[in-house]
Length: 428
Image (cartoon, rainbow, N blue to C red; front, top):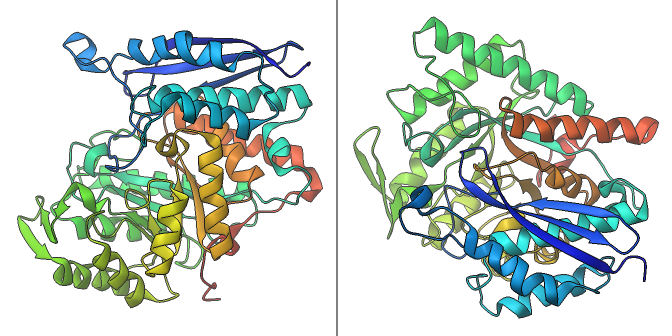
């Protein structure tokens, strides 16, 4: 069988934070090759797949020799001879080999790198770009970018409590134009911070390092940057990743930057006030993962005016998506392949969200690499949205630039998702 897996190779490489990560190469009998690199998150849901690390003192405990030993000694022998075109079968084998609910035995970093490598090898054997292989002849769109301008939370030494202040170029007519619009806002934000003496570098994902006296001041600055770049609020809008599990627990939300503490209802009122004052169209994890009532109350309060995304709350789980839908706790899901641990589980979550009419955002992590697989997933699965981080640093730009190449490959048939990717109607 030409597409049988002949060889699997695992190696240690380094991610964008200078930490070890797992890279896997897969070679098929026909000579086709695929590669996958495991990303790593700083802000992590308690129920997501576990990165297997070595612990101890070397490399601050982040080394991945145990995960690599599992790739070489357990995964490679078991998968050799399997058909790479049978992604579901390969991933089912990985899940069975691991035998835990959160990939704690093999390591989610070992399983996702292998799963992505197999997927890329299959596309290579088919002789088509990965996005086209995933689309399987169905019409697809270039995704709407969600791009960080200011980084905060766990991505920036907790200089703000809110993790990401992002923009969405809703008025763009193409992926290329969308990136131009974001580039202008990113530059305008940097110039504004420079004029105030607050331009102090960039955070983990490439957004400007926050130097604000309050979380709301970042919203004010971002709104000014959009306007300074020459865009209306219906052309470029704001998206927030609250990452509330990082500062909220048991219904208590402690904002260190402002030395304030809120209960669930009070925190809800704070965020609803922000929605009234700023052009916010999307909010991720507005409440902590242990506060489902907060998620439900927020989703009910905003109605169809805002995309409410579950990240730590849903951890790329189809079962959690369906459970949240039954309780009206979200209307969108973040899809992080390494949260699930395999491509098939990620796809199952996407399909569950698609059936519900939810928004779907394929997302990178704060610890990234040059791997561009997620851009192809967002396009080939037609999820409509892509969140990669900011508009600087090569591990981010590799992905945005891959989107441009895909748009060129599509030629005259290329379409851009824009507003249509959101689970609510355009105000226009």
